[in-house]
Image (spheres, rainbow, N blue to C red):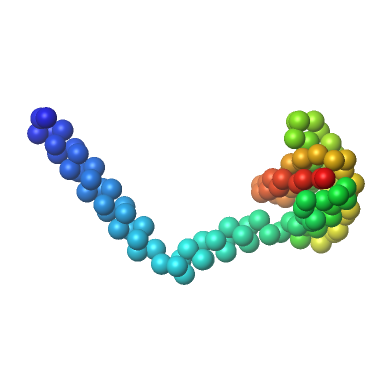
Length: 114
């Protein structure tokens, strides 16, 4: 192997060890903080029960447009939720993706109706 190749391998190992040591320096508190931020970004809408036996309840903390699509890709329903509004929806048996859009945020949630 030429010297350049040896240098590149050594440099790559150095970078890998450096990134690994940085990852090891992340403590549990930082991981918990990151998980909390992710959860807070997705907690402004609730869909329950899931799985359901036909009726699901949607609650949004803010104005939101809801688009329900069946697993087959067929459009099922479009709903607008006002701030802190609760709405019940009856769906036939199947698997659905409920896309909740508020501003520039879209949260897709999978819902199963047995």
